[in-house]
Length: 184
Image (tube, rainbow, N blue to C red; front, top):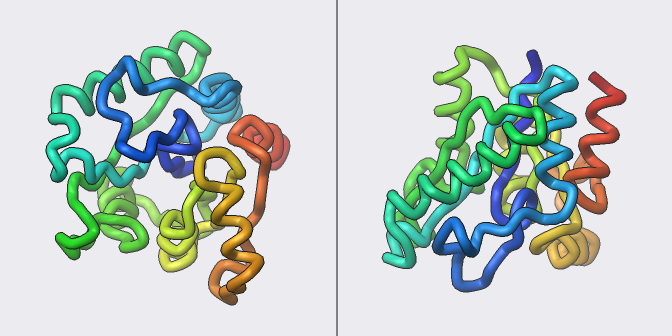
């Protein structure tokens, strides 16, 4: 069963500049929950890899984060899918940790947990840091135009990076799910 790694904010749910701080503020992007269910039903294991610096900044606490993730899991399950695991980095950029994307610590942890290589797995994000982590780990980088994706796409066009040249671009997670379901 192939793993697909998904970023959270801006890919699955709406991104907020001052952090999504509660389950009430965690609002899925239209079609994203159904897309996740479609990917799951097509035989993919969905794993979330998300930077959550709001924890370190005191914007929300672990109970709030768990409530957001429980809401996401419940919605995906109600749609007929399953999230295999959720990995998050609780640090700020200044903390210089291994797990904050674009570093690959979250991806290393996923490999260890699932006892597999993520080489050639799809990794879907809306920011350059997601794509850089994917490329560094040997994943297939996928950019969605939701969240910060339009801005990231413009940045990639203006400042091309050979390591990210293989990035595949989709309008949203639903369009990616259609592609990935056919390719599975």
